[in-house]
Amino acid sequence: MTKITSLDLSPFYRNSIGMDRLFDRIVTQFDAAQATNYPPYNIVKTGEDTYQIEVAVAGFSEGDIDVQFHNGSLEIRGEQQRDDEDGAKNYLHHGISARKFTRSFQLADYVEVRSAQVRNGILTVDLERVVPETMKPKSIAITYAN
Image (cartoon, rainbow, N blue to C red):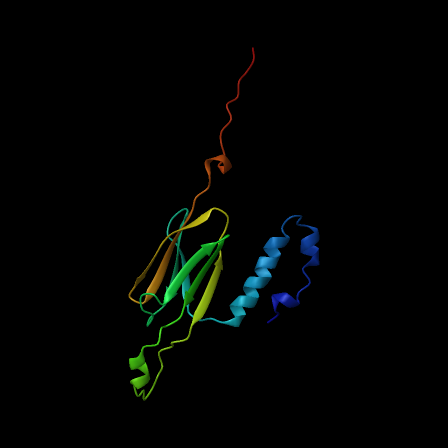
C-alpha cells in the first residue's frame, strides 16, 4: 500500500488554486489516522444536515472526557483519573484499556456542535450544518419590459 505522503501532489496544487489547504488536511488526516486507532469511532449521517460522531469511551467516568470545538476542529480527549483504590487492586488480567487519548476531527464550514452525551459507554457528539442565509442560494425575480 502506498502512503499518500509519498505521492507527489504538485500537479493537483497547480490545477486547484486556493485548494492547497484541502490537500494539506488530507495528508495530515492520513498521517494521523495511521498513528493510532484508539478509541474506535463511528460517523453517522442522521439527516440532511445533521451528523453524529460516536466514540467508544467505556470505563471513563464523568470528568474524564473533554470535548472542545475551535476553528473548525473538534477535539475529544480522555484521561482516566486514578483512584487510590485502583492501586490496591490485584489484577490477574487487566484487559480494559485505561490509556489516555486525543481524537481530532476537522469539520466542514458551517458545521456546529449541538450537544455531547455519554450513554452505555458511547460518547455521542451531535453536529449540524447551519448555512447562513446570506450563503444560501436565492431566486432572483425577472422583470420583462414591454
